[in-house]
Amino acid sequence: MERGNFGTKIGIILATAGSAVGLGNVWRFPYMAGENGGAAFIVLYFGCILLLGIPGMVSEFIVGRHAQSNAYHAYGKMGGRPWRFVGILGILTSTIILGFYAVVAGWCLQYLFASVAGQLNGDATYVQNYFLTFSADPVKPCLWGIGFVLLTHLVIIRGVQRGIERASKILMPLLLILLVVIVVAACLLPGAWKGIEFLLKPDFSKVTRSVLLEALGQAFFSLSLGTACLCTYASYFSRKTNLLRSALQIALLDTAIAIMAGLMIFPAAFSVGVNPDSGPSLIFITLPNVFQQAFSAMPAVGYVIGILFYALLVFAALTSTISMHEIGTAFFHEELHLSRPKAAWILTVVCSVLAVFCSLSVGAVDAIRLFGLSLMDFCDRLTAQVMLPAGALLTSLMLGWFVPRRLLHDEFTNQGTVCLRLFALWHFCVRFVVPLCILLIFLHQLGVI
Image (cartoon, rainbow, N blue to C red):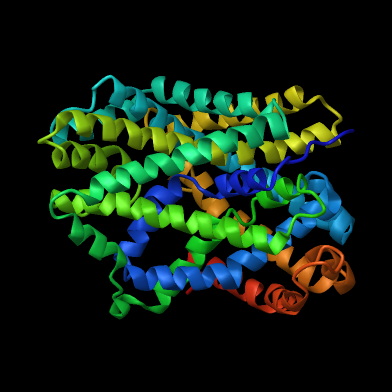
């Protein structure tokens, strides 16, 4: 069966970076940086990217490009049949994430529509009630969530170059342009400097062991390690792709977007005296009020900024859902020998059903719960605290201890043509540093440390 491939180097970077850039970059990274020492947290985070993120990304790149196949087959070819379990784990993880992620992405679509229609104009109580009423509706959030999965489906069925790569070349530049426009507008507001200082002024007194572990975790999740996404996308890389350089470029772009998101949110929030909260309340309750108050002297500007902000969220979410959908689609397409559209429909239907139940569990039907949590919260914790760390840990152990060093050397260096001096350092990190970092994250997530 003929496989697609990325056609250009910029396509590789934008598509793979798009898989990492998502809603978490917009609210989680800025909030964590602001609450954990600002620039001090950013420095720690960047160090964690170098210690954990880059080696982990290159590891998954090697697995995918070596096999030139879906994650299930790729892990089996690299490590042997028992290691196919890691590929299956990644496929399951990405499917579950896509199911509940589509719910929040659907909320973003609804808020984009509401912004265009001028429905978010009102005081803080009105905006809060708007979100509570919408999220508790048994129909609308489900339809928006399904709609987002279908939007992703339309990209996936067009293939790698005509679908994923082309969409990434459109969405990522648009996302960056929107970010720059909103950042400039926010930083020009009166009192905006307090927000910039809040994010970028280092406060090393707040740096504790817990902050370091949070920085490790953010680096881990921000780059999509453990989802089989990087492995799947790397299977579409050419043999000449410089894996280390690509990982560095993707990590830098992902980090830059996260920092820019902070420069978008905090100046506007501090301009009106609001200290942003984390979680959905930041995006769907706090920020609509922030934009409305910050640009009260120029209502038309506030109206446009609100639309641009939710358009940005939709683009960020879509680049992530495309990558998650592709993981399972590639598996069914290649292992069951189905046409690409049929393989994509399997994922679309499964994720749509999961999205409906997740949506209902946080609004209309409280009975949809597991272990005392709503289905959506359970899926979030299961993937974030168990499945993602397990997948990344097993990948590093496989490459560090079970795959022949010579094979890794050939893949890392493109048969000896690039990065010769850095292979030993990367291999050391994969064998010792990455497993230790992931183990610490795993224990921290479970509350052991």
